Length: 120
Image 1 (tube, rainbow, N blue to C red):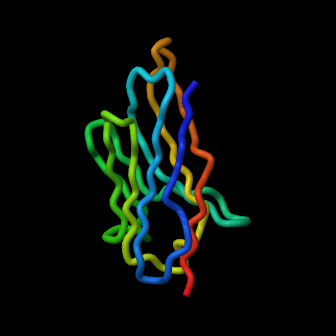
Image 2: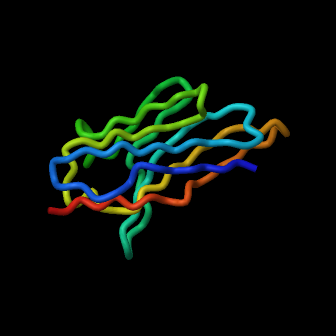
C-alpha cells in the first residue's frame, strides 16, 4: 500500500557528489522516520542516515560531515546529499520509511535500492 521510488544513484569519481531521492506514495496518513541504508555484497545492511518527523537526524560515523539527510513532507520525499564521496561509499542504497496508513495501521517500507559506485 506504500510505494517508494528511489533515484539519483550512479557512477562518480572520488571526491564527487551525488543526491539520492526517495518518494513515498500510497495510502499514507503520516510519516514518522525516513532513512537511508546501504549494503555491499556479503555484508549486512547498515544505517547511513535517518531523520524523524521532528527533524532530528542521525548519521553513521563514517559519513558525518559529508552526507546530509533532509525531507520534504509535502512531497513525502527524503533526500540524501552525499559529498566528498569515497570508494568505500560504494554500495546499494535503500530508503526506508515508517509511518501510519489511513487505515490507522503502521507501515514499514523499503525502496528497491539504487547503486552508488565511487571509482576513478
